[in-house]
Length: 318
Figure 1 (tube, helix red, strand yellow):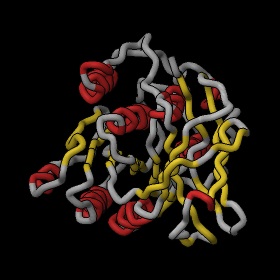
Figure 2 (cartoon, one colour):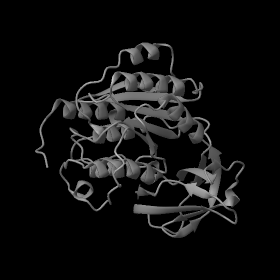
Figure 3 (cartoon, helix red, strand yellow):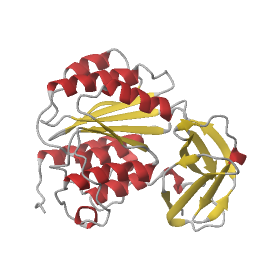
Figure 4 (cartoon, helix red, strand yellow):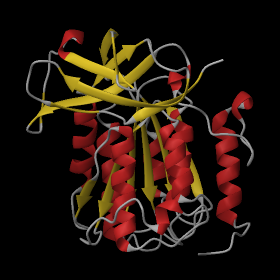
């Protein structure tokens, strides 16, 4: 375990969260994280449906079964993610070498090349500091100059990056996809992994962690000290893999492990293409409590296929 310190990264994280949250959503150490948008009367589930990895198109509300804390719900509407807020967080710690950095620049260009005028882009990097380079913007030619100015140095604030990505997801009403690239474990975050995952549970965003050159150590269970201790604990290689998988699981995303020499442009572009094929299922909770954690169970009715969606939401109704 490591003693807490008022590091530069800590100050930057606090400033960025305040800046991206807006005047009515500023946070202090004592205030709870913003809640998933299901605090209102309508819950929206961002779901990917596939059969043996191939997306299933043309589904209608009657094709789904949605249970909220075990109680089946009536789907009011079904939509698509053709308009999205794409959030990209890039690990630019010192271990990211020149070739990987070049691949990251190309990967961002590949994503922005697929965006339309209806989409928005948020982009940030993290090492010792977190730097917001675009904030729910329509990408333009200015971004290329920003990409060329990126440099790799320092340590890895991965937990803080998860929190910042969650905050950025709340500044736009479009469905949000968070592409999080890293090549290593957290080494200097202020936030713990328990805090980072708790914030994600309260944020309506789908996370796609992309891990480059990570060890193949078996993913450790969520009962290890790293996931349970309230203070910062240095992760083992297995802990790091488990964390990235957990980020995907709790938000209904997908964890992609790639080689260090992988073509990241193809990886990022494929993530966005798959995200475009997701469904948005909306329902008004009926027959369940108004507060606390709600576990979701989303399945297909009378047909083969798998539904990948977030594990649940936290409601806090008046």
